[in-house]
Amino acid sequence: MSSSPLPSHPSPLSSPLPAPLSAPHSRSTVISELRAAGCVFAEDEAELLLSTARTAAELAAMVERRVIGLPLEHVVGWAEFYGRRVTVDPGVFVPRRRTEFLVGQAVGLGRRAGARTGRAPVVVDLCCGSGAVGAVLADALERIELHAADIEPAAVRCARRNVVPAGGEVYEGDLFDALPGGLRGRIDVLVANVPYVPTGEVGLLPPEAREYEPLVALDGGTDGLDVLRRVTAAAPQWLAPGGHLLVETSERQAPHAVEAFTRNGLIPRVTASEELYATVIIGTRPVEGQAIPGPP
Image (tube, rainbow, N blue to C red; front, side):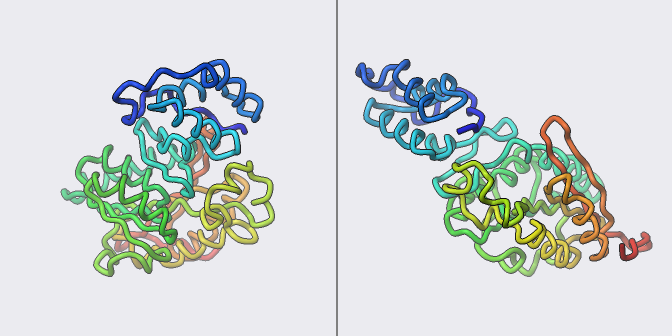
């Protein structure tokens, strides 16, 4: 196991104080069990599990789930993302740290949209998974009309726990089919964290991803861009003039992703973060009188 540990903040479940742990569940024993299972950050993970578990029995169960390979976020029930703790249920895609770069880009675009229009920006988190992106955007933008959607029922249930308290709505369905028709032509910022792993490379993912996260959130088709192409084809009908579509992809796939944006009348811009190893394509729907890019 190689996933990075979550920050060692006490869970809301850690009050009242946990019952005293018996010798079999001592800190050193937990570290040894995690290390034997291949957890690179065994010490940090042990501290997190010890601070989260309310009883010795709960700690033993959590250690067991981690040892058999469940993602740490599924074991503790949350992930740290963009400085915020978001709920992550078992079977739901775990938000990646590299996606924080996409969020930062979306925050800037949302603020500019609000300043330009004088109203709360309309933001949609498509392929929302846990709803982490939408929930963080609601925090960062303060004034926001937020909508999120996913095809996975488990993801939708989890997203509602993160997005609804932030004032947003969550829908279940396939991409834009899930959204209310009234959003058509009104979206200022559309973030779509689409799956982009090529089908032939899914088997190369870490076991905790390919075994415990939904395949639909990982498999992007033969070249990894099937869902991205579907999103870019429909996005211009849903974006407001001057609205933006943001999609995460790999550096290798970026040229082909740009072609899909251009082919569908969106003005593309590639942004990247070397620190987070993240590549994001931003496509803008032209406003009236603005030149529309020709075919690639």
